[in-house]
Length: 412
Image (cartoon, helix red, strand yellow):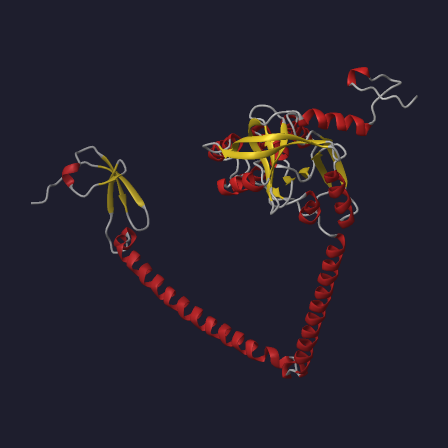
């Protein structure tokens, strides 16, 4: 391959390619010829420094973004307008291409904030209000994280540092853990369907806890975790679920739906995994306290036994029952006296009632010379109830007579 370098890109071949520096220089030369232009977009990320303001500007409809740099007057305009994530702006600037980093940006000359909130933030807020009314963020839906989880599911990006942070730090705290990893896109258009699908898949595996994790990123990078599909999957998860999205100051809607939020993936281990060493120390402290308590109880019981052994009744145990024994004898004697008196009263009452019954008995009347007259089983007390020829029975004290009436004399 010789040192000949084609002047135009169209003249390059396999044998006569452009070098990287030549290619970048060609890009830079081409971009430098572009005129000043107006660009409309939405702020996905903004970083204000003393030197200037640096903006990631996102397309209003497609998942495409570019860098905008504002210095001097343009930077003052950004600060005066109080620009923030989600704001829709108009930028007038000159395209620039940086050869060292091979990066494209727009050097802003004028930055104007369009009226109204940014559509992204507005849409997220509207979704938040909708899901709040449905109760998806209610504390009553949240379940506690197990104190000692063993099987842990992780939803994260393939090859992401978040996975290593969680697994490594968790195993340092508790060696006997099992991880089930589900990789998914954690930014871009594929993020919501893949993350929600991964959550539902892990929810069917009978795990102790599920962690949805992603490292830091721009507002645009994390917006997939505010998608309704992801939020509903997290809210409907029966397994306790934890979010660890971005950094401390980053919030997405999934954070409101999960059972516990961790500020970063690194924070997951300290939040949901107990420390084996700390638990071991805690058990040792509990063991020590238990032994001390048992020794204290033993000492108390030994003292009580010693005091009982020195008590007077222990020297002569018979004295311990003298008082109760005397009370039992007295109570027995009083009981016998009371029973005898009651029995005597009852016998007198029975005798009185017997005498009364005897005085009223028909046999008592018969013993005095009287007799009863019966006809066909009925007592006759009046001669008018009889007639000549009737068969009657005379009941006397020592027997009965059966007679037939020959004549009836009425008493005058």
